[in-house]
Length: 250
Image (cartoon, rainbow, N blue to C red; front, side):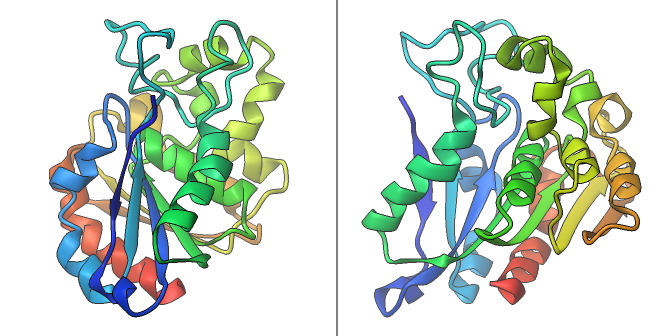
C-alpha cells in the first residue's frame, strides 16, 4: 500500500500551480509535515502545491521489522532495493521519480514543468539525491538536517547493506556526497541544520557535502541554526524561509 498527502492552493482553481515535493524522515509518514509543518499559510499565499509521499511501502505482504526504527516501514531511504526480499516493494526512488508524478499530474491542476523538492533528515537525503540525479526535472532543492553521506553514517549504512547489498559501489547512486564526487551537480541547494541536533555528528554531518561541492557547479548555502534540534519545532521555524526560497525559483 502507498499513501500520500496533497495540499492544493486556491490559485489552482484558475491555473496550474507549481509543485513542491516534501520527503519525510525516519519513522514518519506522509502525515507528519501535513500536521506539524506549519506550511499552509505561506503555501496558500505563494500558490504552491505540496505533495508528501509516505516514507516506505506498507501492508501485510511487505517485509518489515517493527522493532527496528532504522529499517523497513518508515525507513525506505528513498532507494530502489536490489536485495531479496525487499526488491519487490521497496522501490521508493522509482515511485517518486515516475509513478507518483504521473498520478498527481493527471489528478490535480499542477504545472509539472515547475517542480521543487525538499525534505527532513532521511527525507533531506532523498531530496538531495532526487535533485542531483534529476536536475532537468527539479528547479529547486533544499533540506532540513539531511543525511548527506548515508554510505558512511551510523543512521543508514546498515539499511543500505540490506536494501542494496554489500557492494558499496551500488550505494553511490543514493548518496549525495558520492553523487557530487561522481560529477553530478545541481545549481543551488539550501540546507538548514540545528547545531543542537543530537544526530548531527552521528549521521547528518552537512560539512561533508560542503566539502564535496567546493569548486563544483553546485552552490550550497549551509545555515547552522543555534540551539535547534532535530524536531518539527526546528522544521516549522524555518519552513517559511524554504517555501519562499523555492517559490522564487519556481
